[in-house]
Length: 136
Image (cartoon, rainbow, N blue to C red):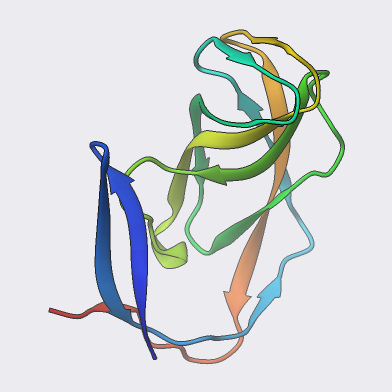
């Protein structure tokens, strides 16, 4: 199936058409916690969402990350994680360098503040899946 992969690069929306497919996987029982630590200061207002830079977190190849739902910061919680620039493939590993943070109180995030935690689990593809292919 074809779909668009969309990301932001240098303030500009980028888009490529990819030919890929859905596939199944098995999650390993051994996981790891990875801390999401602010890499900038940012004032936040209750009820608003913010993109906040975090110290780089490496997600190994053939692994998935799942947010830990326990709130880790008094000002709010991490809604999602991401990487500036083009998204990576699960087979190649990925990096996280920002979070989407939802503020539940007014205040200021400080460089070095713990914002949240993710669970990282290894996965095994349960059937052959073709590697996504960028269409020209």
